[in-house]
Each structure stands twice: as C-alpha cells, then as structure tokens.
Image (cartoon, rainbow, N blue to C red; front, side, top):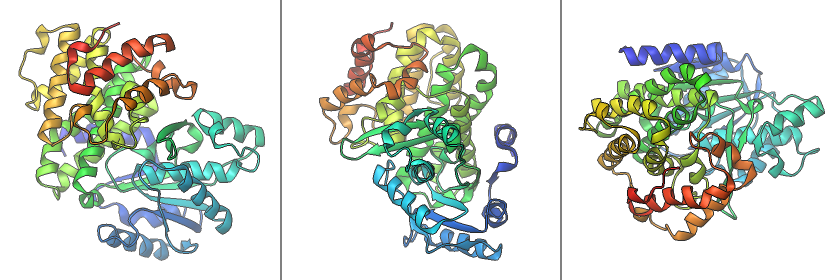
Length: 428
C-alpha cells in the first residue's frame, strides 16, 4: 500500500473507528456487523433486478441469512437520482408498516440520503408533519430532544465512490416539482454503522465513476477553501490526501475500470471527502448544484462550477490553493511555476488545471455545453443562495457573501461559468 493510501486508512480509522468497515473484499463482514444493531431489518437497495447489481445483492442477502438476520419482506427499491421527497415518504411508510429494529440502505448517495431522511420522517412525522422544517442545521436533533426520542439504527452500505453519504450528517432531498434540492445537516442522521467494499465499485457505470470521483474532489476542495484557521490543521491532511488519491488515479480508473487498486484509491479519496465535510462544510459550487438538478448530476455540477469559484476565492486563500495546485501539477495538469504566482493569477492556474482534468475525462467545463441549460438556471441559483435554509453554504465561503452581494459577485461567477470567460469574475 502506497503512502497516500496508508495515510487515508489511518485517517478514516481515526474518524469512524469500529463503526466503519472498509477496504477490498470486506462485504462478507456485513452480516456480523448488522447483527450488532438488530435481527429484523428492512433493506432498501439500488439496482434490484439489474444485471450490474444482482450478484452483489444476492451475496448480501445470503450473508445476512448466514448471520441470522431476518429481512422483513423483499428488498425494496432505493431512491431515484437526487433523492426525491416522494421516495423519502415511501421508505418511511415501509418502516412504519414492517417495524424493523434496523434499516439497511444499499446504494449510492441518493438512496442513502433518502433513507436517512425517511428514518427521521418515520420517527417524527406524527408530531412534525411539515418536511420543510427538517431542512437546515440541527433541526431534527431539536425535534428528537423535544420528544425525548431516538431514531432507529441505520446501517449504510455504499456501492459507489462518490458522495460518502454513508459517513456524513448530510441528506440532500429534492422537490421534483421545482427541481430544487434542499439540505439536512444534522448529526442525528449519520448512519449508525457503515460498510464500503471498494471492489464493488468496479460495477459502477462510467458516468457515475467520474461524477462520483469529482464530487469527492469537490468535497475536499470546498472544505479546504472555506475551513476556519482553527480547524485547518485537522482538515489539511484529510483534504489534500483525498484530492491527491482521486486526481492521480482517476485517469487509470477511466481507462481500466476493473483496476481494483485504482478503485481502492478512488474509494479512499471520496471517503476522505466525506470526512472533510464532517470537519467543515461545502460552499459555492455545492450551493449552485442544488438548483441544477434537472440538467446535471450533483458531482458534475460541482466539478463544473468549482474552477470558477477557485478564481473568485484565490486572493483570500492563496497558500491553501498553492498546495492543491501542486497536486494537479504533479499529475501533469499544470505546467506553470506556481511558486511565482499570487492571488487571482494563482487561482487561474489551478482553475485551468482542474478544467484540463475535466476535459481529459470528457466532462463539460462550461454551462453552455450542458443540454437544457438556460439563463433561468442562473436566476434560480441566485434566488436559492438567498434562502435562509441554505445559508450555511454562504457562511462556508472563504469570501462570505451577504444577500445584497449575491447578484453582483456570485452572479459574476455564474456568468463566467456560462461561457468559460473567467475575466467576468469579480473578486471582492
């Protein structure tokens, strides 16, 4: 195991301890881990009946039975992309009907996020029926405290190297009528235990592989850019190791999808992205992604927007971005001498390196390249940025904005991303 992987393993063990089982070939440990939470479970799973998932789901079912775990009913379908509210309500209703003593979610970020919210909805909806009140920071914990309640245990089995939803306090839920994503940020929805067998990600579709990997970079990068000076020492190795593992291994995974060593590296990197967002928070690109669910996957939206935010933030976080830039330079995406650059020029160099990586793997680098994009999406992004329920993203910016500055400054970033003209970005 190389140094970066070894560092990642040690960081993740320090983060989750015995509550997280991860690595190559660890799926067979699932049943014994689930048994510590309960013997009667509801299983919510992606890929039911699909060729790519069937062997894994059968292996999981056999392993649960071997360890005396009773699955109540059949495995039930996970969530649609972006975790629609309707899936949250559906899963919560099944929890109420079957009365398991634990819930297992198996899938990517959307299914795990929907299950997080469904467990909370199941436990609290009788007293708190308005789902809108669950969004924001710490709302569910306040409700649980007021009711003197605890949520039933949740065991998350991650299938895709992407959002690290299996490790975090975040649950992104979408109102499909408006195509606006809203965010739960609450320690009460962190899965009780989790497992990720990185070898399972070999079956990931190509698009999900690269979307997920760049989502992992976005988590680590945005946390590193916005973290307070007090937490920087803790966050720095987590963020930089995660970014390095993904940037240096993504090309290999794209060209050789069954390369288990590269899959392990991407899995460790995206997991560190999850650790990063438990130390700090994401900001501008994530906030904008919530308003583009109808045209872009979450990871793709973040990857597209982040180079433009790097230019906007660069004068305020020069040394942090220089460290990130060296990773891209060592991977061959930046040729200029970063030590000679400062402020906005340094940001431009890193942004161009990030765009070079995106182009190499076939990602769009401007909004105009995205089918279905219109100026209405820019208006929606700016409106969402003023929503108090999403203000945590503004506060996490290294150049924090108040509502009166959003149209001018965030607007300049969005208009730059529209056509790729970074000269439009106004630095505050």
